[in-house]
Length: 210
Image (cartoon, rainbow, N blue to C red):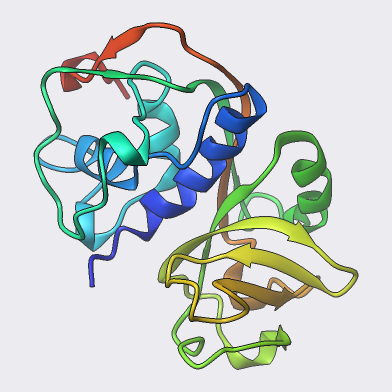
């Protein structure tokens, strides 16, 4: 019931980079939500947010492991102590259909070179999806949900959702390629450079500058 899909989607991207550098996964969705949401912070917890703000936060702040900071299904205060950071973002990119109508054609290249892409989609008609390729004509480009593209087939993008393993194909969606299906190309964010961190970083919000 907590609509922090942006935190799940961005965690998938960060977990790729964390694992790439030999650190354990999964990362803490709760940590991401709590520390990018609230007064004077850009995201709004269970009411949503943007993945780019998470990647900006992760330039200077820790993203803890799930085992150290488990998911509570509601927003809490960002801790004011220290947490061990397992990944630090150096750079990220934001892509939008309005700025580049051909952005979907770049997804395959991005996946091969930079890993998962967090994107917004229209999920309003996906509740009963169970298998097969979800067609573009069953949805609009009015995005209301965040997910992560993790792979592809000839005809579909393979998408990791946050609705649990009993939904879709073991928690994944196969979405029709090449038609901006469900607004998949409307907004996306992905990390282009990240590195492991071998020190503790303060969670103090004042370090976060836009």
